Amino acid sequence: MKAWAAPEVRRLPGAGQIPLLHDQGSGERRISASGDRARMYVCGITPYDSTHVGHTATYIAFDLLGRAWRDAGLTVRYVQNVTDIDDPLLERAEQTGEDWRDLAGRQTDLFREDLTALRVIPPAEFVGAVESIPLVAATVERLRDSGVAYDVDGDLYFEVGTDPRFGQVSHLSREEMRTLSAERGGDPDRPGKRDPLDCLLWRHERPGEPAWDSGLGRGRPGWHVECAAIALEHLGTGFDVQGGGSDLIFPHHEMCASEAQVLTGRVPFAQVYAYQGMVGLGGEKMSKSKGNLVFSSRLRAEGVDPMAIRLTVLSHHYRDDWEWTPEGLSAAEQRLDRWRTAVDRASGADAGKVVDALREALAADLDAPAALAVVDAWADATLADAGPDTGAPDLVRDAVDALLGVRL
Ligand code: 5CA
Ligand code: ZN
Image (cartoon, rainbow, N blue to C red):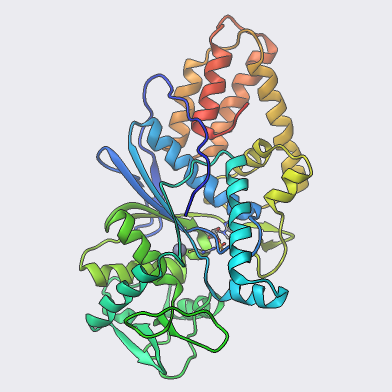
């Protein structure tokens, strides 16, 4: 699929450090890439409803990482999928009477517009599930041929017990896994499964549902194997960072990892598993299924500056869960105004330290709130007393743009 237009990213003097990231797999902070390139897979949207601010938080978090990697001089290879065929999408299309392909196309277009406005650097590969069906089906065939899959009434399941490392992403108990599996698209209670946690690889054709021909018969792939296959195809195994929102830790990323590890015989699937916390509204996780949503596109249509949306997100650490509030947005709007006033001055407080401090904040597990505090302090000093440095406003403007993705 076509991704979206890339924002301009200025090069700053000197070079930043490769960030340390909290790794869900080991529970420790780990270096996010080694060598001179970085490979990242971030799970993309299921396009049945507009991009809400929770989604944007996830893509902004990993955008910060991509920006820090580029600033450290790394070549970045970034891949993101679009789950443009799945049960929730078909259910929504059924409810509204729209063709599921039109719904997915329309919502994916809106997503592209949102992420362009938010200055998120696009992935090198933006890969749809539908266009990947031959690839995913071939991956499922290889799993079947290696004896780690079995049939339940014509559907094919992956046997999670065949991966000795199953559980090493989420570290949950089996009870917790079972509960989350039922809540997040799994079917632990389906009769005929060897293990309630085993996950669907291929679903045979059902009347009225889209289906594709394959060596497995007519049908469509399960969700997890879609991301396993796309990541392996476009990044190879052992890539640097697997990312998404924390609702994907289990079952999605646990299953992707196990499927890929069994298939390739190599571990780990990803070196670091990193997660954006959940953004909520009114005390609950913002989710398309609950309908408690604040859409980026609606905010933009109401005249909200996308850079204020971005700053609202960045005022929270990516690993924290937080609530979207109108007060949070207006605080971000005020901050944006203040920063813009400061960089419009003819001179300002010393900016060399600002770049160093921004780099340091991002290198420490993408500490965006610490980075905002650095710019706040510079803006305060500059507005209190312009200071002697005539190059400072432009350098701060460039640093805020390149590292935080906020255009002033
Ligand atoms: N298509 C799958 C991933 S393969 C999917 O989860 N799609 S999604 O549209 O539901 O979510 C897209 C991304 O946004 C995922 O990484 C998900 O973890 C993240 N996300 C969803 N809701 C929130 C939320 N309330 N806060 C933060 N991130 C969220
Ligand atoms: Zn995914």
